[in-house]
Image 1 (cartoon, one colour):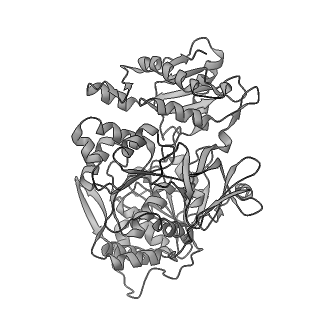
Image 2: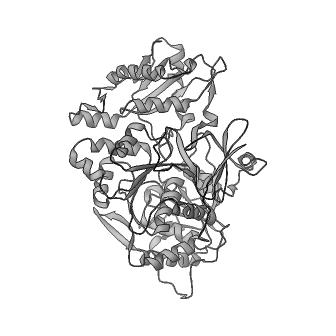
Image 3: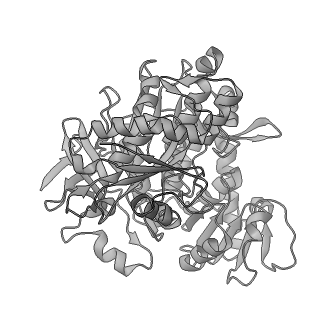
Length: 573
């Protein structure tokens, strides 16, 4: 079995979240640690003030019966109250369970019931009214002031900030590194969500490893939009900021409006930025509008940008590289807290390469199929109430089986695809759809997502979705082209343009059987609401294939598409 591990030793791991907070608050008591926008202006909180509030909340939770080992689901947008509550719960022996703020009633109630949580916190009335008053909960804490007679167990969050009556109360600074403090539901990219159980040691071992690789300190500035119910934002980015005493500024549009993100960028001037490729694409598009926007974005204090969740297209990476701003890429899963590997910023980025293991983490490739296996202090305790998944999550030697396929290169691990996405054509040849999807989206700025399918067929086909926001903006600003990509006047013109791009993709493929013979450009946008995207904005393949099943069938069976919003593209040999 091939094995790759870090040459660095894992050292100086904080024992628990309480100790981490205590140390940071003492070192940087008067420095601003967190800020968010109110009435258009950023308002901050010092580390000393933050610690006092966390301690008050932990104390007052006990007044409402919250004890060690109790669980609380937090159903809210990113905001100060969510941060304070989550830290208070984790640092006092409880277990925090954040869920996506925009889940519908069915999904939210399903997760709340599955978690067996006795307590719930909601951001505002939007979340509250999605939930049945009959849920078996001891208390529902509400961040915004709400009164609703249908819920007889509501508690205003302000009550958790009351002064402590017992002066000797402190956070749990003696919690075991092996205690579970956080449960996160996976994004469900390929199907059902699983509840991942994570410990203090899982989270903080990663921060100790990152300190060996990154020069981040109290002078750094984060502009954060990544959702805290997801491991990329809620563990990796959040605790990187917290554990280093850096300034964490919340992005006021929740990552939904690139123009607002850019306005906040001008104010905060982040020294590092954690994001997914879609947002980088939107921000780079804005910089191309004028020289001032370009200079504001690529400012002199920007150390590096970090990308994950999907490969960053080369043309975006090149924009940073030519300005000598490092692009760092990482890989991991919620089950690994999440980071396992990081790319070396001093090496030129290679497509698909996601770097080498961080300190304490060991990577192996399974002999039979090159599935990536992981061991380390970052690996979860297991899934909650899911014996079937736990049986297959670890192999007989104790390695966590990630479900990703990879290979080792000179510069580190190369990610190939998800194991369950590889399909066989009718002639038994294997196709890796993610490689083709990356080639398609990398060819054209005006494509947001692509999905390749062809299981049991003679050849692969593709569903392609346009970047309608960019097309509209370019049209309104009289933009002509980005790089060498000409802005089409409409979706029908984009379809004609894509024929050349897809032909170019095919020409570059060594394996003729993998060439796409037809595609359909669908004049719709994927979304979290219809479950075609995960909350972390990744494509949800099974949902897309289910919703657009007849479009795929048309590409194989119908002479003409049955849908007005579909533009079929036939690629000639």
